[in-house]
Image (cartoon, rainbow, N blue to C red; front, side, top):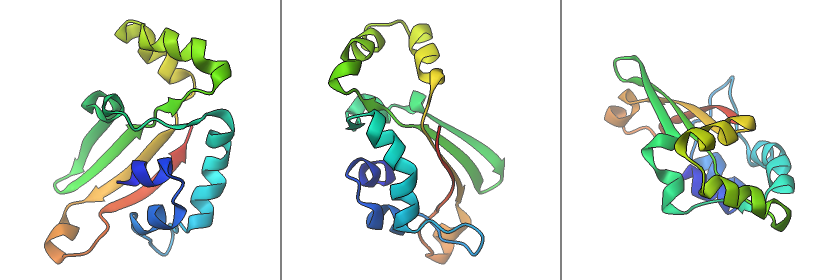
Length: 131
């Protein structure tokens, strides 16, 4: 849901979807400021099924019930970048990985599964959003 809110530039919803802690606040203005560079460089965030494949997300267990999650955003190419986008789409997995690593935009978060038991939400504590 967070990726969709970001793709739609719905900063209010994005802010509601992440945990707000005393030391880690994510007001709508923070999302807008961070993603302004992304939207200057790209047409938008690709929401096609391919961008939600498991290979785009890495999840590691930090300790029982506490996970680290990193998801790579997929940009939609502007017209000037169409050749690069086509190169990516028709590349081997190894070539794609190299292209993706050049300047990846990441959503990096901590997920505390214990919050499910307490009925607290949201579960995502955003650590990083950006390249």
